[in-house]
Image (cartoon, rainbow, N blue to C red; front, side, top):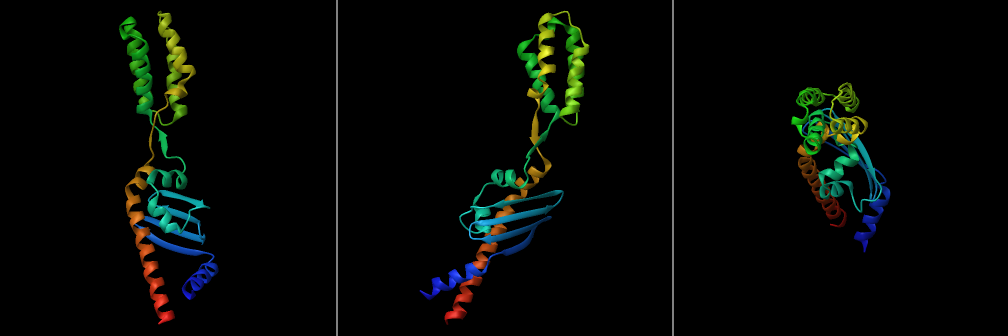
Length: 202
């Protein structure tokens, strides 16, 4: 009975526990406020983020050890994907290939290739929109292709492509090491706690 009573007192008195460690270039701070509630903060290598969990069902180190990298990244980083000009241009090209035959207007096909080449090098959504709207400057004789140009330029945002952000790729790479470190911290804490009990009762 004494064992459980003392453990309960320890948890009651420990309202906030801070654990700091480093995983490669990433500084990690774990804050356990009470059982089932905790916050993580990370910073390093151009990556930073934080998140508070209010219902983990245990300690933060145990919780992080069992979640997957996608769930972790989505909460801690927020946006996982960034604009990709190449993918966006490929999406537009795929639309025209599916809905229109290039040989109907060879000159426009050449202009489309030029615009898509420029679109592939765009930096963000707004730059992509500007380049794609350049298709409106063309006046193809084929009413069919004119209709497709109107659709692409009006609904350009439907063709936006994305890729994993640099921060997300870094977390994907380092997350297994972060989990191993959390398991090691949990193991060391358990060993320390058992040792404390041994000194207390023996």
